[in-house]
Length: 120
Length: 113
Image (cartoon, rainbow over all chains, first blue to last red; front, side, top):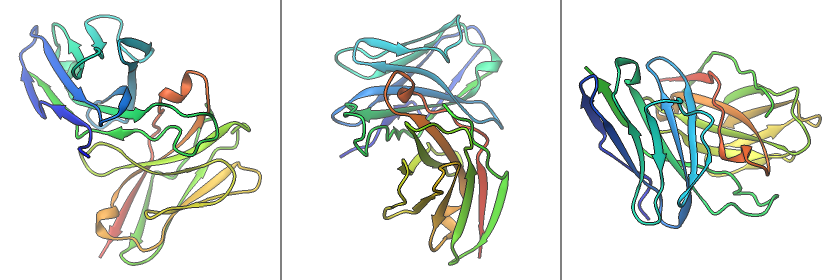
């Protein structure tokens, strides 16, 4: 059973370009989360999606950032008009269908290897 | 979700038990304690979680005090590959917050030969 896949692993963009980061969740997982880790900082939640729905985007910057998780295909985190401050590691995680409260595997998230974005 | 407090860093000798403490004095009855770790530059990895009973799996043990205000993650026989940042996270079951892990600064565990 393959783990969470992210590509590309490394992405270099010039200021003003667009960055598209892809995440393929584990087989059978219908929940996807995106986190960002700025250099020398901790992981910060960005967005939580289910198939075709954004459930919680409270951690997403208001401008230039968007995320989707279509019915078919990977989840995409899109950053338009990138700036140097967007340089970071972006991690995707997936989890299975959430089970009833009290079930022990309720919120185990499986993380991908991350995409390192460098903005020149 | 309740706030957690962890020591910034800890050292452990290879082969010895590593005991990582976490304070969560404001934890409420429906909040779980989760532990994740992040080995350098990799994605975080789930370790273990619990509600009020002690838990053990192939990676670690989790000891939660009776009042649930603190817990300890135990790696019984630490190896060099256990060197990582360890995060203690308190998470409410149910509602929309269960989708969001809030990572603090964590504890940098360094395992020495």
